Length: 117
Image 1 (tube, rainbow, N blue to C red):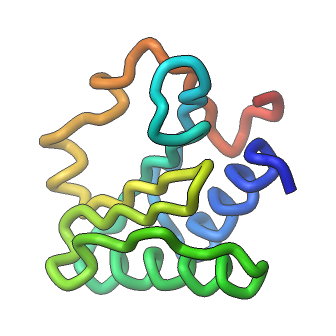
Image 2 (cartoon, rainbow, N blue to C red; image 1 turned 180 degrees about the vertical axis):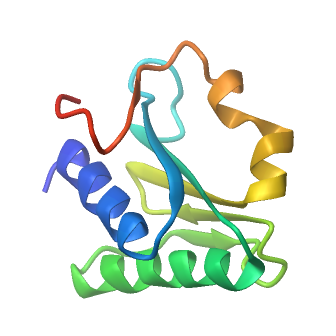
């Protein structure tokens, strides 16, 4: 899969775990960290952990190494580094505070409802 296919796949994995307000940012040409960011949130620590573990498990099932998983124990902001795709799984309160979408406001933003990336 290419990075465009991966970002859609992982957004759907998060959606399956009832992640809220899933957005995908196309970071190519904007940041060297990843081609895409996915930003979403859960409404409880348990849900944040469930979303994060589902992403990790889905990556491993596809033979993709998870480079880094940080923040899992506190479950307030979990970063799942999947190489070309980095997923930020927030607790709702933390997402409202950090507002990453605004920080990376120059990146094209997509949701699951929009088709083209």
